[in-house]
Length: 393
Image 1 (spheres, helix red, strand yellow):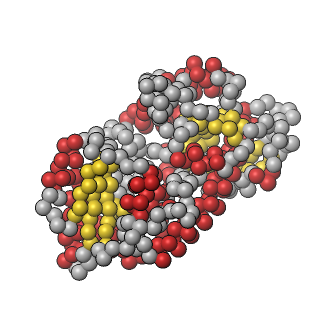
Image 2 (cartoon, one colour; image 1 turned 180 degrees about the horizontal axis):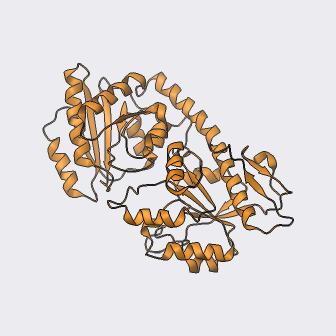
Image 3 (cartoon, rainbow, N blue to C red; image 1 turned 120 degrees about the vertical axis):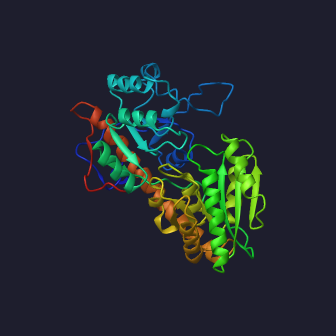
């Protein structure tokens, strides 16, 4: 039995609840910061472990084995609901439709969280858009991370998406790094592995022009560009290194992929983080910077500016003046590393994250119960409905 007090306020039970708990969720994937944070707050739910498609790479969950008709039929008694987040781009043609048909055949509901309306790992979006056209109309429930993304989903597919914001990425609290105050203002730009949605050359050029404008206006700022030693586009990385080779106001670091702790410590020392995205929808980096109280300056790509709008300033790639203005606004309104103000901001964000995580967990529990109940026949089962005016977590 499910306690009514644990349900989201937008969920109502119209009959006595007899849905078995804990609910078993086939999460695709299970190992991801979003899901790991979510399920820690959901004792009513068991998350199935990610099947490993290749034993020689035990940490790799893709292509997702659960999105497969044979897997669905073979494990029909092992899960109550499937929840897809990522991984569609790694599936062979036809496998998604086969899995959707199999879920319908065994009467298991599908919940789909739309993280990416544009896939950051792809240059050409044709296959990704085809996947969205297949899964969104057939999902029993749709979630997404921001209100503006939900509006786009309604406009494009006629589906109502519940908004469940991304939970904290860091282990928020007293151990959150706060950085060290430096004499210079430092803005960072992480090119990472130069995946397809990162305009490494364009963003670096825009940054260099912005630094020149800021210095000319009496606001000297130091840039810090970080890129991985192993990248998907070595030509772009090398072009960036050449661009900044003679700049005294820009530090360049070529690094191995850092641990989570090392990345958090490095970000915490920034006055602002600049996102170099040419396309995308939502950004885990926006969430990480929010946890660390590091202001974000990002492009207008997708719906990133709606994740934490009070801590986000927008600029346009190729427009150094817009980036200089955005950096100036960010420095004026944000906090500096290592200061008491940064510490207070981290504490305030952590308190918000704790409230948010439980709220988002309640949203998911309500959605799971609703989806399972809707697939069950009329009788003694529970009927769980989502109130139409409760669409935002």
